[in-house]
Amino acid sequence: MKLEDNTFSVERAEDSSGFLLWQVTTIWQRKIKRSLEQYDLTHSQYVLLTSLYWFKLYHQEVTQIVLSGYAKIDPMTTSTVLKTLEKKGFIRRQEHSTDTRAKKIDITEQGKELIKKAIVTVETTDKEFFSSLSSKTKTLNELLIMLIKNNKLPLKHFD
Image (cartoon, rainbow, N blue to C red; front, top):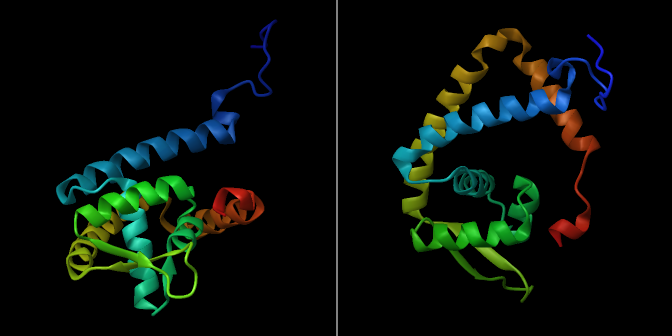
C-alpha cells in the first residue's frame, strides 16, 4: 500500500538495512549485558578489557589511543571506562616511556582471571545468538568486516 505522504524510501521496515541492524544490535546487546552482569562488567568494560587481554597475549604494548581505535570506542569514553576498570583493580595505567601524552595500559592478574571467565560466557552467548545462521555465520562476518572497512571513522575521533 503506497501512502500519499510517505517520505520513506522503503515500503516495509524489513527493507531498511539500518533499521534491521539497529534491531539485531539492540537484541544482541541486551543478551550480552545480561551475560556480563555476573561479572559486574558493562559491555564497554568487557570490550576494552578483552581487547587489552588480546593484545597482551600477543605481547603488544597498548596505549589508550590504540585501544580506543581498535575497539571503535571514542577516546573520552575509553578513558572513562579505563578509569573504572583501574578502580576495580583490573588494569593499571601509567605514563608511556617515550610519549608523555600517552598512557600505557596493562591488565592485572585479577583482570586476567575475570576476563577469561567473561570471555567464555560471552562466546557462549554469541554462539547461541548466532546459531540460527548456522553455516551463514562466516558470510555475515565477512559482510560486517566489509562494512567496517568501508566506513571508517574520521581520524580526528581517535587522535
